[in-house]
Length: 558
Ligand code: NOJ
Image (cartoon, rainbow, N blue to C red; front, side, top):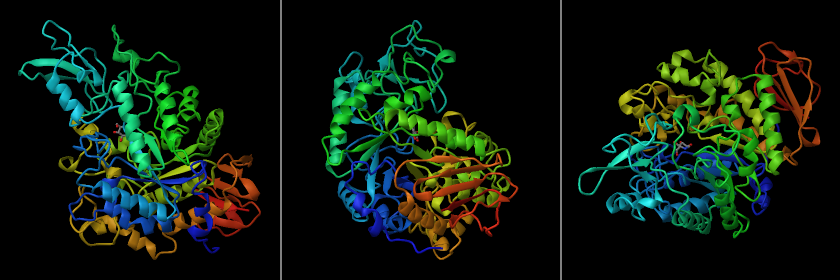
């Protein structure tokens, strides 16, 4: 294998480019599960700072930090009680500045999560709304309405929330009587904000400037398509509106309404006040014909593509998704994003090792108890490596989720009493939720919480975690960690312009494409070996002998 260039040789030069994000490798840190510096079982900002050398060695370009704000953790931190502070369990604003400086010194950009659709019910605005009563300006920051029926004890409509149960919650008024209902598309502790209210708009712009002034390089926008709503009666029934994903045209009452782009156009002006301009990426589950609006240069600039999270490990599915995503990105002049795992889905090493299939069936496995015995881990690991090389060879930015570089598997069998995800509680245990990909990372082979902290971990770690620890993999040349480091370093030297040309191959199981300067990525998604194309092998996801490309293997060649 060729010698790896050091990061200082190859990346620091690009730090000030306004286009740094277009082909960046972004590593998602779920802060409460990354590294715990003070032994309270919860990951924190000093913990992240202590691991910056690890991130630098890994070779990423940016960190995306999931919410670290004060939160009652009704939804893993996506219930924000104060957008301009740090949860005291995770540190202080000074700790944030120290972390940001350490990342920047290591040549790593910092993207933070912004959650504009809803606050926590502990946010001072919501508490003020409860105290102020019907008709008040405090309630006008949210969506409070009267209930139906003679006593107003029926919810305004039958819409269902993402985490199970209805979207309306009735409050008890200050005088102790049952009162109005408020809207929440996620947990009841996450009341939706009213984006028609200028005060809400102004406050978020203040938040964007607050973090930009502290040196944050960009923002990931949570449920970016949900902010603006038309709640005029009559309400369409849930059977008609659903959760509002994949809607083809403007007019849905709460999803992907055209007016949401007024918000993002205003945000763009804020981003452009900085040098280089702050970047943003939308989490928007919208119809493909409407994605470009979110990714436009006048708007957020980039939008996530999630199709690979649902795709089977299959050459033609991958090709269709890649082609479609590249076309979509081109429509807005943006670059595409590639994601195999994040904090909301079953880890891909596990998905690829499930007998029923990798994409759509993973939730069924979790629902059935998530036994590790159902997972062919060897196969999952092999496919994960092959898919990772495909992603890293694609033009655009690749998002990695913490732990995937260790080949970490989903912890499917967390006992009910240890679970935290509101999905589990709001469905009465019918859905197990997303805790299995959020289990604190193993850093050492053994010891309390496998080096995550000096004590326990807020979600139980299984005994097999030590084998996947950074320390165990550090020294092993064939480990997943060594593989990721090699792939990222090589990518950095190969990735230049954003061109991609498909290479046709006689086998329907082979996906091959060429990038600039003769760099080729060739994957055999099938089980049967195929002939190996000519050329110099730069990196392979599994051992290759020069004459055949084994099944479920990717090679980078030149
Ligand atoms: C999307 C986030 O990724 C997820 O974790 C969260 O529960 C919802 N948005 C609600 O904020």
